[in-house]
Image (cartoon, rainbow, N blue to C red; front, side):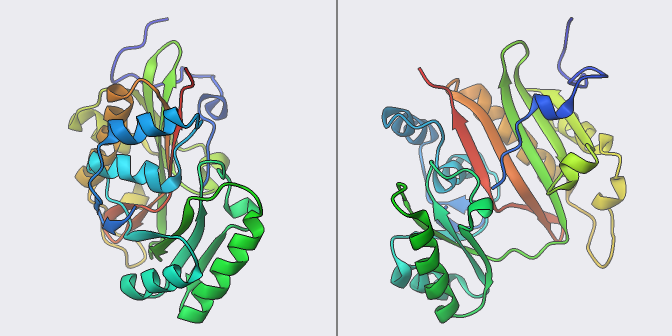
Length: 263
């Protein structure tokens, strides 16, 4: 079977869920994380024998490709988390940050909508206790992004087709509705805009419930960037941005994971 760039993937009748294992779950200004050489971040993770980068590391790689990242800081303890939250502005989110923790929400390692220093301090201490003896890079403190619309962007290195990309409705809707589009990398802007047009729920991109129309070109740039990460780094097996929140007209990555290929 031949699959060329621009064709839908997987073929009709194939199980979408089997094509991507959806994985749920930066320091700096949005879209401008602290400068990082993506190859160095990836090689450092591989040198430590890691199967994945942490959320913080994953976002640094993605930010270097122009993916807009929520403002956040990595703190080492509760006091530093409060300092970070004061700097970012309330409300904030606090998460455990470690490449060993891929399903943080399910483990009670994410605290949302924290509106005060006391709330941040208490959540940080609770998360640290819940982590137990698991390795921890720190506590990720990020601005609480407000947006009624969520997307998922995924990339995977398929053994047959090579780097493939997926765009779909985020959250539980990706599993319930399976409203997704697929392409092979590399993408250009035309390919990415076509992916967006193939989402059946097109109204989600338009003016709806007081939300402005989505900047489709900005969203297309995220798709192109994820594809380029896979093309540039053969040891990256998977990239997940879920959710990618549409805050007003702009896409903002609030959670990300890069999975690595072992030697």
